[in-house]
Image (tube, rainbow, N blue to C red; front, side, top):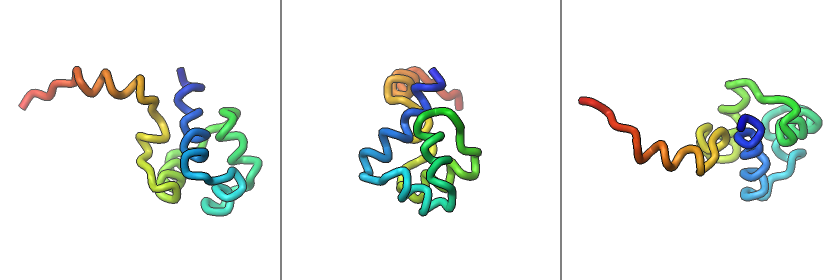
Length: 81
């Protein structure tokens, strides 16, 4: 499950037409590190995840979740007031 969740970065990069090298330039990291994030051999820390989301103009939630995981739960959450 964790592996599938982190693969979302790869999908978002493809959707945005951003290469690993370009993301590395935008966030000030080595392209090899970005490649590790995309291939799930390493994970960005929370601050870096926030920066990645900002430069890609997506939410952190969009980077972390899968649609299958989020949508059904959204329908079942009830908040008591």
